Image 1: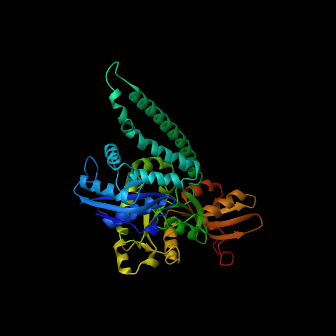
Image 2: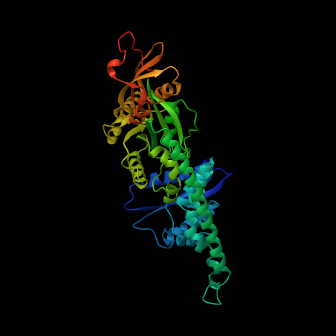
Image 3: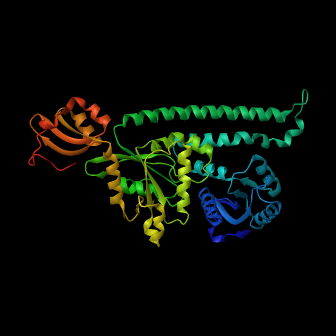
Length: 436
C-alpha cells in the first residue's frame, strides 16, 4: 500500500524521499508506528518525505526485500513525486541494495545507513565523529564487492586478473587501515575516560538511559539546572553529559545523560559508541526514561532492555521513570509500567520529588556513617566530604571541624586518618547543625 505525504511537510531545500516499510507477521511494532518512526528519522537527517509505501509479508523477498510488484509500484511512486532517494525501514543485504537501485534508478538507503547518517549529522565532538566514522566504515566493508560488479568481467585466473579486482583490494585495504586507526584512537579515549571514572569512584553515579526522544535531556536539564540542547527530535544527544545533582540537602550525586536508544540499533553503532555508553551504563543506578505518552511505549521499554543486554548492562540496578505524564489523557494506561515505576513530567516537574527520594534512598543504601575530626587546614578533605558524602551534622571548634556523615566505603577509606569514635563526637542538640 502506498500513500502521498502532505506537501506542506516536504522541505524543498532537502532531498525528496519515499519511505518504504516491510511488515512481517512477528513484528512487535505496529506498521503505523514503524512508519511514523521511519519518517521522523528521515526528516531529522534532512530528507523531505514525499510519499510512503508499505507491504505485509511473511518474510522479505531475498532479491529486493519488497515483492516484485511492489518494487514496480515504488518506482512509479518515486517518479510521480520526483523523489531523489528511497529509504527502507529495515536493513538490506548488499545484494538487495544493488538490485533495488538498478530497478528504481535511484539511490537506496536502508535503516542502518539512515541512522548512521543521522549520527554523522549530529556529531559535534571529536569523539562522536570518530565513533560514527568507525561504524560507517565497518558497515561499508562487506558491501565493497557490490560496488565493483561492473568490472566483474575482468576477473579470472592467472593472466585474467584486471583493474576491478585490483581496485577492490586497494579499497578494502584502505578501509581496513582506517578502521584500525579509528579503533586505536577510540581505545585511547576509552582509557582516558576510564581514568576519569576512577577519579570519581567515591561518588554515587546515576545514568539516564532510554529510547530516543523520551525526554532524557529535558529531565537532565530540569534536575541539574543545566542548559544542554533538548529538542523534540531523535538523537539530539550523542555525547555523554555529566553534571552534579543534589537530589536532597547533603546528598550529591553525578548525573549523566547519553545517546538515546532505538529499536534495531545498528550493531556497528553499538560497538563504536561503547566509549560513550560506558559513562552512563557503568553508573551505580540507571534511570530508564520512557515516553509515557506514546501508545507503543511498553514496546520501547523492551527495545531498550535488548540494547542493555547487548552492551552487558542488563544486570545494572535501575528504576523505570515514565516521563511526559502531563500528556497522558488516560492515566489507567500507566498501570502497565508496574507499581515500582515513577511517573514524572520533566516540563511541569510533577513527580520529581518522588524521583529524588528514590535516588537518595539508593545513594545512601550502601553508605556507612562515619564521624570525622578534620583540622582547619585539611581543606581538601573537608571539600571531599562536602562533595561526596551526606553530612548529617557539623560542628566547628577552635582547632577542628567535627562532621558526622554518610559516606561510601571508598571515601571512608580515604578519610581513615580523620575518623574518630562515635563516643568522642560532640553530639548535643546545641551543636547539631542543619544538613548541608
